[in-house]
Amino acid sequence: MKALLFAAGMGTRLKPFTDNHPKALAQVNGVALLERNIKYLQSYGINDFVINIHHFGGQILAFLAENDNFGANIEISNESEELLETGGGLLFAKRFLENEKTFLIMNVDILTDLNITNFIKIHALKGGMITLAVSDRDSSRKLMFNDKMYLKGWKNLKDNKKKVVGGIFKLRELAFSGVHCVNSEIFDKMTRTGKFSIMDEYMDLMQEDIIIGYQHTSNLIDVGKPESIAEAEKLFK
Image (tube, rainbow, N blue to C red; front, side):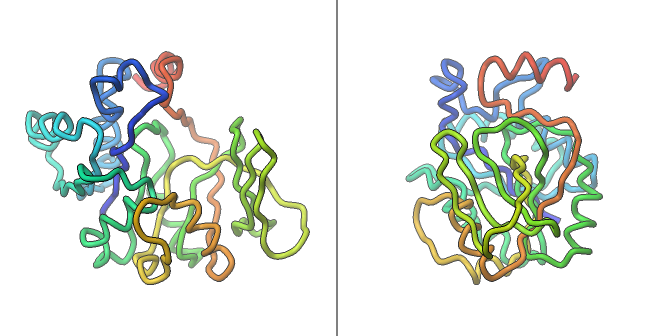
């Protein structure tokens, strides 16, 4: 199985580090996020990667070259001309992923000890096109699931905006963990082009296709802010 690592973003929340570096090279206990996540997925037998780059992408290429790609097979989806966000980034990487039955997507600035083997197994068992890792934790944005853990909506707690499909039911609100398991048929379903968020696409797809939430209690930290690095260093040695 291949994994797409989203590493192209500007990392504005990690300033001033990202004024001169890509967020993928921010370090937790002396180890770059990119290295940590490559090795994390390798520990579950995944050794084929697609990495998208934009912001200081040359530094990522040099880092990988200096470390012989950490023994992985790595393809680069180069968004140097335009940063395409998560949805556009996935679509731009289509040529690397469309022949895979299933692939993983992971944000490079997420650190977790989620059991990837179990995650992939549940994706196969449930039969959805997309499975999203989610947990019950503080977040300004929540995904909303019914009692079968089918995605039915999205909510922004800051402005109370939300989108819900399928009628008025009691929905479980959970935070997205930045890890997806996706069937390649998604490329036949996507309607947007250019620069867009994958969540906007998911909000459309959930009306026709089963998108499943996989709730976990594993450690997870979004290393998106300088203060979150200190928190991550307590959990990820």
